[in-house]
Length: 307
Image (cartoon, rainbow, N blue to C red; front, side, top):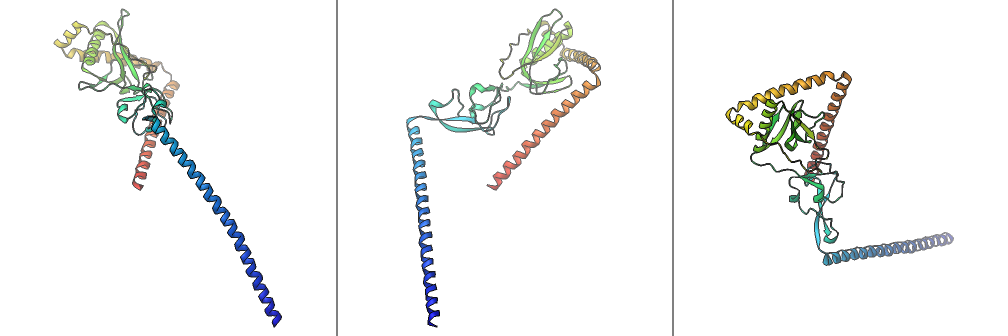
C-alpha cells in the first residue's frame, strides 16, 4: 500500500514539475512575442511620427494649393464635374501650371483630349463652350448638304458656294444638336439667324449651294471666321416679303432631298445593310452606356442609403 502511495506521490510531483516547466516555457515564448510586438509597434509609431513631422515641415516651409485631378478616365468632349474630378493639396512649387482649384473653374468646359485617371486636370486640357445668350434659339434646317456620317455633337462650318466659284462661311463652328437624314439642328443667335436666312434666299436666287464641313479636332482647332456678307438686296427682300425665306427653304429642301434620293439609289443593298448595322450598333452602344450609368447611379444611391 505504501508503495502505491509513493508511486502516486511521484506521479503527482512529476506532473506538477511538467506543468511548471511548460508554464515557464510558454510564458517565456509569450513574453518574447509580446516584447517583439511592442518593439515593432513602437518602431511603426516612430515611423508614422517621423512622416507626420516631415509633412508638417513641408507644410510649414511650402505653400500648399488645391489641385484638381481626374478621379476616372475622362473622354474627349466630356463635361468636367464633381463626378469625374477630385481635389488634392499639393505644394505650390510642384503644382502643374494652369492648375484648376475649384469646381467653379470648370463651368462650361469640356475635355479637349482624353484625360487619364489620376492626371492633373489643367486649363490647357479644356475647351470652353460658348455661353448661351438670351437670343439663342434652336433652328432646324433641311436646306444644307450634309457630309455623310454626320453625327450629333460634331462641329461644322456651314458654307455657301456660288456658281462663280466664290465660297463663304455663313456659320462658324456650330455644334450639331441633332441630325436625322437631311435635317439638322443648330443653336443660333439673332445675327446668325439673319445671315442664314440671307444665305438661303441667296442660294435660291443665285443657284448657290449650302453645305457643311466637319472639324477634324474640334476641341483643338480654333473656329473659322464667318465671312459671308449678307446681301443687302436680299435683306430688303426678306423685309418686304418674309415668306420668301420659307419659299426658298422649301425649294432648297426639295433639291437636297432629290439629291439624297439619287445618291441612295446608287448605293448597293450590301452597303445599305452595312450602314444600317453600324447605326444599330451605335444605338445599342448608346443604350448600353445609358443602362450602365443608371446602374452606377442606383449603386451609388444604395451606398449612400447604407451609410
